[in-house]
Image 1 (cartoon, rainbow, N blue to C red):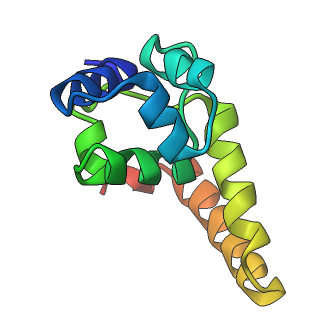
Image 2 (cartoon, rainbow, N blue to C red):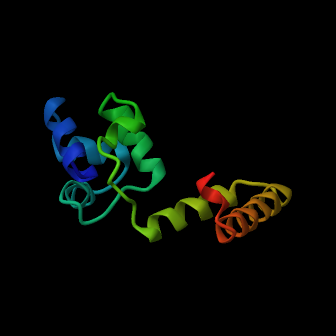
Image 3 (cartoon, one colour):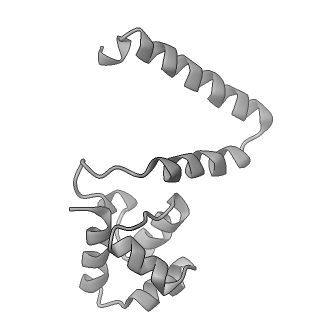
Length: 111
């Protein structure tokens, strides 16, 4: 089941409208519609609000392991997280990312 289908399923189970979801997540009704039709994916802050609104753990929004987030969503989440970090934390994250790339290149990620 795709993320959008799960959002719609939970919304209907809670007897909520798209308008109510939109209001609680601070987005437009058309945004909720796009989420439910799998035409876009909510960013992390909206997934947190969705989970709260739908009274589930955030991980419960993802019911199958084959759901992947579009690359642009992941990048946006990384950028938002980094904006909240100190310079030293940003440098550490970058150092770790480079280390992971080198680790993957050596084929050690399967150990």
